[in-house]
Length: 367
Image (cartoon, rainbow, N blue to C red; front, side):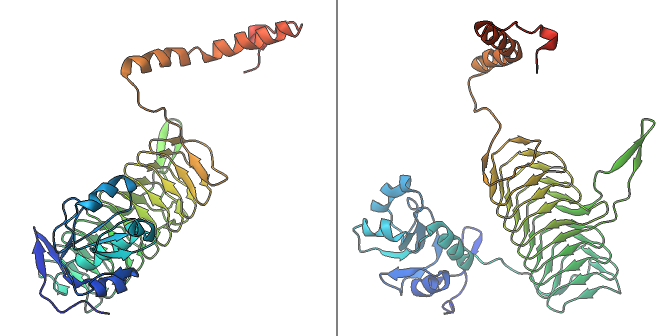
């Protein structure tokens, strides 16, 4: 069912497309209980929602807000709905947060600029630009580049020679895509990200560094999203690949020849060295540091700020950082940690003495 043909309203400075509640329920795949004719004109938290807003409950710690919310309707699980005694309309979904995400996309569609090439843009004569694509102000499109249907190249973007951009792609302002890279359908690249810069490849000879030409590409499969100011380096020989549906946050560095598996997610400020193979459905926490030439098994989770120097062979949660503590306590623990090797040797010597063995000298004690 299509949304009601009503005029777009505004909530603050964000454009809102109103929906009838029944139509919204059908589109997001939720079960409607209550008045489907309600006008939904926005989304808001439970405790701040108004008479035309939709809200959601996914975390039980906010359950108390159900009793006082003024929302027109609430998205929640069938279990929560059964315990909520109210005539207020609700949409039942097994995953309320995902259902809310779908509803918000309906209510707040991405505004699209007028199709065509802006007068200040520069498009090479050999480039192929779909008639319904958008090339924004001061953007450049290189020789033999391909821009697919309904794709938007934002203001100040630079699309290099022989780049292929699929359908329904959105490049926000000042994205740079180097030559020969590929961007699949429905990808979203936030402002300032750089796709296809040279990988960090140098050979040392007599103390001097010789640059290794980076002749691979970056290939983004469909439905990938790249955050603001993230950089993905092109491969040295082979391609750097981000597979279908992966999501990468702001300020992430991905080195050359790496692979990010389908539907993996990488949080902000993570640093991933070259030739790392991240499996499907992996989750990499913010500021994680991953050394080069490692593999991470499908479904593995690397906690925030974790340094990783060896491969992960099986799924599960991996972390390597001490929780925060008062500074003076941290100082005491740090001093004690520096004595662990000495303590280990003393315990080993004591164990051997108790067993009647001759303790090894320190220089022959095993590490």
